[in-house]
Amino acid sequence: MKSKFNIYYLLIIGLLFIASSLKAAEQPTTESASEEGDVKELILGHIADSYEWHIFSSGDIHLTIPLPVILYSKSKGWEVFMSNRFHQNDGSYNGYYIADNGKYKDKIVVKDNNGNESRPLDLSFTKNAASLFIASILLIIIVMIVARSYKQDPMNPKKGFVGMMEILIVSINNDIIKPTIGEGSDKYAPYLLTLFFFIFTNNLLGLIPIFPGGANVTGNIAITLVLALVTFFVVTFSGTKEYFKDIFWPDVPTWLKVPIPLMPAIELVSVFTKPFTLMIRLFANIMAGHSIVLGLTCVIFVTVSLGTAINATMTGVAVVFVVFMDFVELLVAYIQAYVFTILTALYIGMARIKPHHTKHIEESVVED
Amino acid sequence: MSLLTPEPGLVFWMLIAFGIVVFILVKFGFPIVIKSVNTRNAYIDDSLLAAKKAHDELATVKKSSEALLAQTRHEQGKLIEESAKTRDQMIELAKVKAKEEADKIITNAKMQIQTEKENALREIRSEIALLSVDIAEKVLRQELDKNEKQMNMIDRLLDEIEISKS
Image 1 (cartoon, chains in turn green, blue):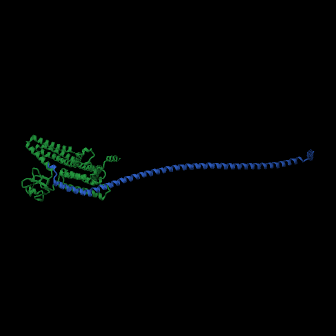
Image 2 (image 1 turned 60 degrees about the horizontal axis):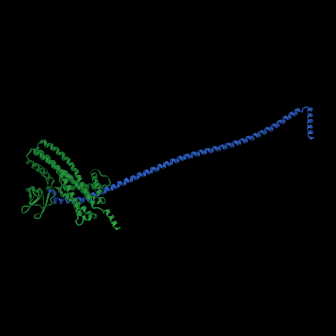
């Protein structure tokens, strides 16, 4: 998964390099540098979260959905207003404004008495949060429709949409959850299915370029952080005595445990690296996918200044590549949800470890 | 670098959204689906098992019926054979009896014939005797027409008697 991330970056850098070098041959270098900067800005701007939901711009018309901004600072208390207030008040509202550059670029900041920028507690309902809620409502509606269909008529085989969902649900349950957790998987199956469908829905919604989708939700580290944290807590709370014993007092030669707790330290670190890798993997894959699709789309606009022929050719190439990448992203959307679920299930299975058999034999030998 | 620092605001909203989704789906969503699918799977398994059992039973019934048919056929054959044997026996017996009867009749007939023959012979004999006496009488009468002859006769007879007396 990590190598895939690198490949994405290499590809996108390579494409940008090609675009810029083609341009550099004809145009003065200063302009190319600025356009390169524009592309970077555009991609990062689309990947990053935003206080408003920009739908489209045509000339001077900008269609954006304002979203609520919720702020708290010690000096000003709670502050709730819509994000379009910034436009109405020349970019600032009640002392708050969105930083253009610096450490808190694109975030709401406030200037203190010394003129230093600082961030208030920012609980704004941002674009990602809105997309998150749309996906959540969609997911709840879909699953409740499926569940209701089962409640009304549990025995008949399902057709159409419910049948498709059944295939997905059953395949996740039978191919991932049951084999990896083993005995007692029924207790975890609903959560793991929810996890899978939550990630999958958000991934898919992120691939739709127009309004209800397009937000880089699962490619945002805050989202994956929460998912990884929940996994961490679920794993830790399902840990058996044997699991914790293996961490703090593993079956290794004593000099590896005392006086320097070398193995316990390694084990303890691995407990935290597991959810950490989950967090980074999902975030990096989805973010990279969004970046490369955006980058490829930008090729069309970057090559405008190279003349009609090159621009037309590059447009064709870019469209083909974007379509291809969208299909790959469709696959990635499933694979990443799958991987997150299977690894969570695996960690839960490992935490529910039963006492080793060898130990019993040793004990019985000692008793003899 | 801002990409790698989680926003507290988004973490907050994510906690709420994910919490709601997990609560609703874990409580009302997936358990129903899983339970129904499991129930249905169990039902299908049971049905398959029952079908297999029924199939096996049918095969057993078929086998036993075939065995019964074969046995019946065998018995039929045996019966036919037996009846043929009985028939033959009866015919044989009848033949023997008929022969006996015939022999008896023949023997009787023979005996009767014998008796008849004897009777006839006896009658013929007596007839012949009577006839011969008659003939002798006639012959004697003819012979004794003349005195002389009568006298000769008497003499001879007398001689005979004398001879016999002496």
